[in-house]
Amino acid sequence: MNTSRRDFLGSVAAVPFAAALSGLAPRTRPGRLLVLGGTRFLGPPIVRTAEALGYEVTLFNRGKSNPARFPKLEQLEGDRDTGNLESLRGRKWDAVIDTSGYAPKHVEQSCNLLKDSVGRYLFVSTVSVYTDQSAASVDESTPTGIITPEEFEAATTIKAAVANYGPMKAECDRIVERIFGARATVVRPGLIVGPDDSSDRFTYWPLRILRGGVALVPEDLQAEVQFVDVRDLGDFCVKLVQDQVGGIFNAVGFRGRVSFADLLSTCKLTLNTEATWESVSEAFLREHKVRPYTELPLWLPKGQRGHFAVEKAIAAGLSFRSVAETIVDTVAWHKTRPADTKLRAGLTPEREAELQKAWRSRSK
Image (cartoon, rainbow, N blue to C red; front, side, top):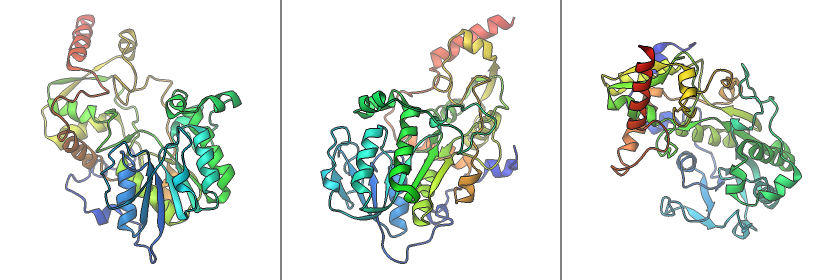
């Protein structure tokens, strides 16, 4: 890892909100920002940062997810699945940040409607667009997935588009670039983590280490892990809009390489637990059909691991809070969930115990 261990561990003390906006400055005149989505996970950090900088924020969504989250903001109701964008007509904004575009047809509709009404269109995409995610350096020029005209027409709902997630998002990227040209900005995050992450793909590890005992982990603990705190991603999206920066950016951690071992050790030290871990072979995990990245979060078999280059995003202002802060805040958020919440990712205690028993019997 290129960063020092102290830089990686960071401070677990709360970081003032103003510090999180490092590199951003209040606008000299109020700007108007439209957020497509805005009330779930990535949306709130974008909204909070934009408001702190003086933007007048408008939200467009179906009004079903956390409708009371921002009661003082203008809320326009519509539904991209049904093509109902009428509330956006005849309005003007300085920029739009699209956090809810999955179906290319939906993105094409919104782009065509807004092309003369907004100055810049920032689309939140994904590194899943790349056809080869196992390369030693996957940068913004790496080829992306293609869909057929038939697939374009068939993806009439978000659910249908998500079934072919990477190629669909790649087509969305191309549509935004085609319609907005130099006024287009595409941000490609990897795994987004932190408070409100209901996928639990990161949350599993701090909670597992906090529980103590012996955790089952993959054998290659020097394998790199990459993710981005949702608040850092939100800050970055707003910064690109504020600075009027166009282009494509991989938005994932870090400055230097962070290993699985680094993550586990930081969880242990930050949360002050007595947990240990037991490494099992990749062959064993395959034999027992442990699902990569979901049942054992952040683990990918050899040959499927690549590195997403982030130098371009860092040069444009992407910054990273300490992983320790993300760990602490994720655990604090999880404690606000119902006590009977079942994680959507990771090994259940029963499954982990079965695997450990099988591994230890095999090793005798």
